[in-house]
Length: 108
Length: 115
Image (cartoon, rainbow over all chains, first blue to last red):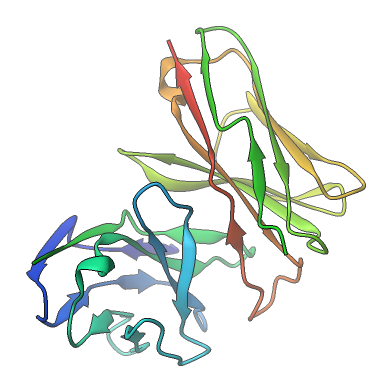
């Protein structure tokens, strides 16, 4: 089965604290994984993808095939990071399979 | 470059009616896919069109259909609307390849409320 699990519906942290948004996946073969972010009243936008190994807005994510995880991390959260975050897996037919999302709330 | 554009942004329909939603992909993109977003089920894939042909389909009833035109614009139609069809319908476009690196871009969505 191809599946993405985000165990936390809501994650609340204080500004300046580290953030880790969890994502686990189930996929046979080499997965292609993404993190999408949806700010309030804005469209879903790509934050980063594992093949790029880049850092966007201070966020990084490492693919761990042994643990089938792709957790999103940021060392120091900012208030503007408050948003819905979705982990997604490209399915075998090319479409994206999304997790249920985690709402990140960064308090001042 | 203009992003993915969806119309209408908001609409209210009555049970039993049908609805058509429209999507204009990013210029040069040949693949258009549709997703349904609800609080309970999250984001679920409906179908994908590439070069006017349905290439991929999710697990939705036949009431949900779509098409793509020669200019890559796409429409999706839902017939015999049910209350449970109330959702945000997202259109996404990409250049079309199914391999690694094919980034998918989303529109702002069409909010459908069925009463």
